Length: 268
Ligand SMILES: [Fe+2]
Image (cartoon, rainbow, N blue to C red; front, top):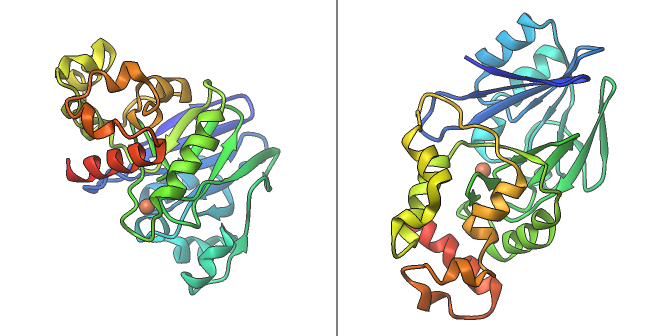
């Protein structure tokens, strides 16, 4: 039903929500105090099961952004556990309920843990992410081998800047914990980009052949994304040379290439 990632001082609970959008919900808890933060609650029953099973004490609810599939059970958890909601200040125009605003470089204390906030706009302007140790809770900013869409209050130029100037500068070892599991579609998109679909390489080929839609995909780090995610590779000749529509990408402006790639992904 859910997976646990156990580190010395904290535990991450993660599970695939049973919906067509393949949302992933997370609960992050301090091993010493049992305080926890619930991230983007969409499946309240499994979250409740985790809280009960491990006797956790919800301290905060954290929203990476205000899209409906990330905020559905805010109300429920706020009233049940009397814990504040944390979100970006731009959610003021979008939320009817009270929240505390958090921003770039804020540190959120949950038990003995210090979670760092990054402002990561593009998928929508209020998007924020969290870093704890080597884990990166990145919402709908970046997925394995893809990035968030810009169809609902998004801004593709801003997304380009966040990915290029912020995400590409993060350490390779940081593990992505995205808000959806889109690995399979992103691999087939990548295949569609190449003149020869086998150019995706044996690692991605293996992931595709062992893919099970009922399971969460494994964790991948930023180094894997720098090597394989097309949105992080638009400046590489070695990537562009193999593309079916290479001519479309001949414009030297990286922002143009990024927008084009996002558009092709939308059409996939
Ligand atoms: Fe979203």
